[in-house]
Length: 303
Image 1 (cartoon, rainbow, N blue to C red):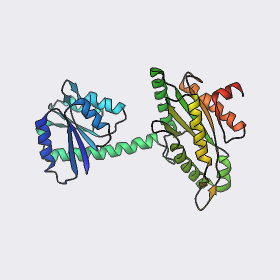
Image 2 (cartoon, one colour; image 1 turned 135 degrees about the vertical axis):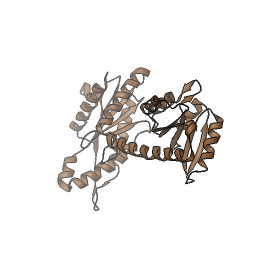
Image 3 (spheres, helix red, strand yellow; image 1 turned 180 degrees about the vertical axis):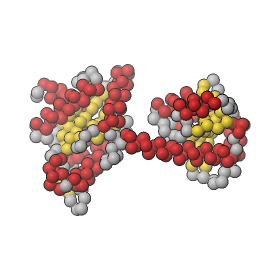
Image 4 (tube, helix red, strand yellow; image 1 turned 180 degrees about the horizontal axis):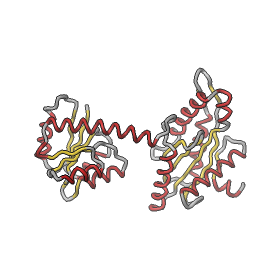
């Protein structure tokens, strides 16, 4: 069943739309309703709905504001605007805000409504696929370097605004070139995919993990100071090493990793400095024999 959320302060329109749903060619849609901005936004952010029908003018606030707020909070639910106006500027405003389609209330029919819902769902799937291509590493499914750079800059700004620490862990697979040279690149790819899963399982849902190089990964840890980030780094490299890694065709390999740890504002003032500090700490971990997590303060002091 495809769940649809309608956010509109007009009860009569809701009843009309509800009646239209009963005349769809398929019975695959289920409609829920909210008549207020705040409640509607809360429901939308649950992620429980496949598409949203949103009133363009919602009381003393408007749907444009709601869709922007939802988008800022990570909502990707396709939106169809409902408007009482037929102005040629409405479609431009709606699309610029992030809506995928709009319907003029007085012109809604069961056929046009079902068509609009199908269109929004299909286009939403296409945009999500394109978004994934643009932000995800093809091999591991983790965030890619471009998205990591964007997120780190965003989290740096948020940490500075609210006075929260921000942790960064850079992890590198030990002797990864030897794996490729000895067993071939397909085996190396299997190792990368398995370690991506293990690293993702070592962090909280609010944190991020990205593949930022061939065998290099980054953990972006929100509201996390240096000591706490060091604990995450130790947990992550333990997750890598605690069990042999299946590398395809029955091959099982012992794999270890090293990590460098840094945090804002203790070790750096900017995102670029944060990365440099964590990278320097990673280099120190490699010099110490690998399979270790080294914090920036130790690498800086040379201890």
